[in-house]
Amino acid sequence: MKVDTAASTLFSGSRNLSGTRTETQEFEAMLSARTVDTREATDGSAEGEPLDFTSMTRQDLFDWMNGELRSGEMSFDESSPFLGMTMKISVASGEPVDMATDTAPIDFTEKARQGIEFFQSHFDYAAADALQTALDRMLGSQ
Image (cartoon, rainbow, N blue to C red; front, side, top):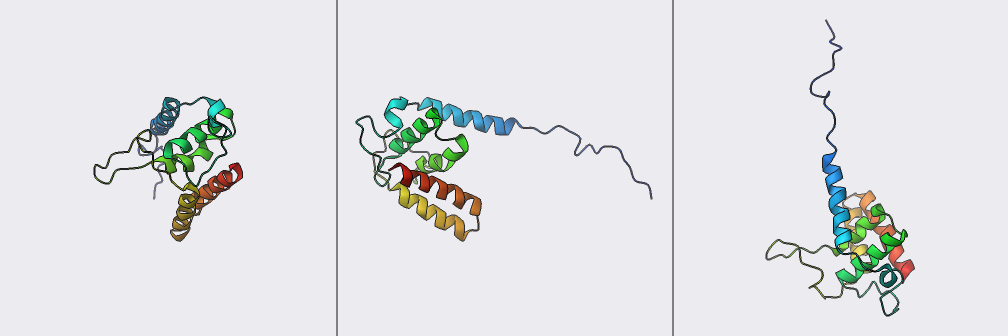
């Protein structure tokens, strides 16, 4: 039996990392497109009201998250669960609903708890841990 030690053409090509770079660039572009003044978003609303994650709009959560990112209090990885909670897809059209036009208040703490239960029941402990960390941050910021 002869063993060929030449490199396989199947695995000899370089890895294409452009997909991950593109996703990161798209995420950063989305955040910069909705940039708010950090003075308004770091510790509460512009009026100085305390944060209430049990009755926030998606835009309010996004603005708070963006302020935390801009101030360095939150990393991009830590913001992923929050970004996921700001997404909303229309059942009728299948298209994303613009947060600026959606003024319905949402209990994000309950939404996070339901997500944790869902991911635990589907054995996705990494996603459940990320949501638990987000929930802890929300409860600590109120």
